[in-house]
Image (cartoon, rainbow, N blue to C red; front, side):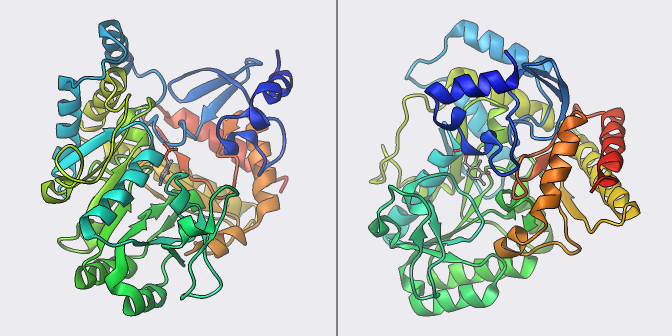
Length: 429
Ligand SMILES: *Cc1c(COP(=O)(O)O)cnc(C)c1O
């Protein structure tokens, strides 16, 4: 069956033919590619067409697909059993590996998805502070828990509106949505309601609006406001964690803001190496609030799954090797610089940025600082670029508000082939 036939068949039994909406290509139009297999930096679709993969399962595949050491770890773990519903030594090893790299964390709890980790982190923040209100920023995605599916209300004093049907307004009445990188707004929010705010949750480098960095003064000010008002600062590093640096995005901010630490961190994607695994962590003292020690309930049948933890551990072992991020970061920078140069040569407004193995680009001349600016960039041109690249065997994220990812498996030849394709496509834009 070809991609179109598979899509038709999928739509009979799966809503929209997909199990996560962005896979349906709605933003860019056209037929989604059904992937048959992947290896290293490449994926092959059901028609045998090969692609250089710049999604990497939306981030997890930092070593590329089917890394031999990871594959071996997964196969041998699977032989020992898929799931026990009882504790295992490997869960300790993975928790130790995470804690060892991220100084803000003394304990973690393992869960199965980023959504679950983000939702649990908020419950923990509320339980630990005894407060209800949370602050998030427009354009940041923290999974699809009810309280987080919110867009900004009409004014700062008003709470947000649900962005999904099925979420009652009452459920989001404690969620305040502010503009990313807007210091005045968050100062105003703390001035008027500081004593009621449990936590501020942020994507430090927002990959769900392509690639927008939280500015250093913005992060620094949030840290101060949280400290002054007894609120917790939650870094959602589901995408950036172990992707932009071994110490995650918080280590990047700690370089610019001496002593900087978030209170709670949320991980997913890379720490599972492509298997369903995520985590949230913080100090031992805050973690004591969780069941079975404290009153904040949290649980999971498949949490700390033995095959998933084997995959995550083997991945963390590879990415902890000296020089890994230097090489990955240099490769990603070379890609973004090459794309930028090619666009400039073609006279097309284009700007890009990257950190570690995560990158983004926009068809505009200045890096956007918030969601509204991202969404005002040239969508038609992005869509034509996306399809032009896909036709030439380069698989980029199928929406202008999504980040891209380079893996250790991408070779210089892959980057060169990508730039050759980009030059050809830019010439048609
Ligand atoms: C992907 C992502 C999530 C959700 O993780 P899932 O595993 O898809 O539930 C949450 N936060 C951020 C920043 C993400 O990128």
